[in-house]
Length: 170
Image (cartoon, rainbow, N blue to C red):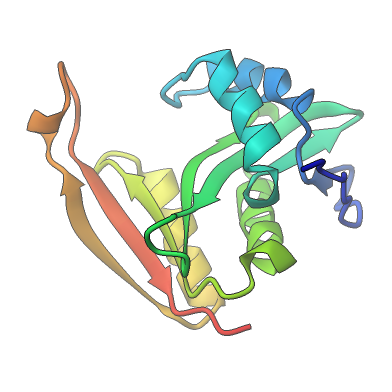
């Protein structure tokens, strides 16, 4: 299945796009510069190729300055799971992460999705605020539950809590 690049209107100097596999390298480079858990370059390329419709890249001057990786859960087709949200440090405070979430939730590919989920550690206040803001702006609820206790991780892992936002009605 080939992916077409759909570009949203430019917001300030950004474009929000469906990524291509060529964007995977930029997503990986950005992840390396952030506090995100760094996955292999292959993961970002694969997400941009096979899960493009549930991923978002933000570009400024053709450079990746933000991204979301996500997928619709096979066993729960009414849930889109956001794996990572990355924003370049030069772009923080501009609302880019929220704009990317809005872009994702407005896509035709997530029609039928009623919930957005993401796992977040207790110390990641920025992500907690981002997903709580989405619930407020969409006038919907959110719930939090521990999903992956710290002892699931091999070393120095922090517990991950699922934030479930929704329902969304489109």
